[in-house]
Length: 295
Image: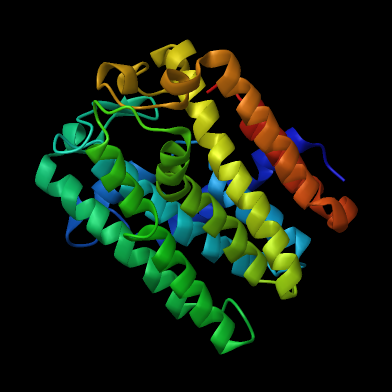
C-alpha cells in the first residue's frame, strides 16, 4: 500500500482531471461564466473534502467512479461558498488560493453567477449519475448535501458568522457556528463517500462522529494558522479574521488552548474509527494531516 503523501498526490491529480471533465468547457456559451467557473475551481486548494470522500469510499468498498462524482459535488459547493465568501458584501477579500479572487479577476456580477452555477452543477451531478444501487439511498445523498449546504448547514453558519462580528461568543456558540459553517461540508464529504459503498447505519454513525470532530478541528487549526502563518504560506490574506473583529478560537481561548482543543478533537475522531481497523487507515492519516498542517 502506498504511503500517505503518494496516495494524496495521486488522488489530487485524478480528482483534478475529474473536475476538468465535469465542469463546462470555457469555449461553451456563456464563455465568460464558464471560464470564471473553471478559474474558481481548478488548480487550487488542498482538496481536503474530496480526499475525505475518497478515504470513506475506500473504507466502504465503494466504486471509485461513484465516489469521484460525490466528491466533485461537495467540492463544487465548497468552491461556490468561497467565491461568495470573498465578495465585498461578505468578507471582501482579494486573494484566494494564491491568486486574485473571482470578483477581482472577473467582476462581482460574474462571481455571483459563478456561485449560483456551481451550486446547481453539484446537484445536477448527484442526480444524473448512479451513485448507489438503491434509489432511496441516492435520494438521501442529495438531501444530505442540500442540508449541509443550506440554512441548517454552511449558509446558516455563514449567517451566524456575519451576525457575530464584534461580539464575544461563548465556546458553545462558536462551536455551533462552525459545526454549520465549516463542519457541515466536511461531514457531508465523508458521508457521501461512505454512502457510495455498503456500510450499515451503526458504521455510518461512527463515521459521522469522526466527521463532526474533524470539521471542528479543521476550523480550530484554521484560526491558529490565521494568527500565526503569513499570507504567502496560506495563499489567502493572513490575519483577516482579527482585522475584521470576528470571534475565533484563538481570540476566545488563546493559541495554546486552541491547539490543545484541536488535539482533543483529533483523538476523539480517531477513537470513532477504532472498529474499522486498517480499513480506516486513510481517514486516520487525513485526521493527522488536518490537525498538523501548516497552511
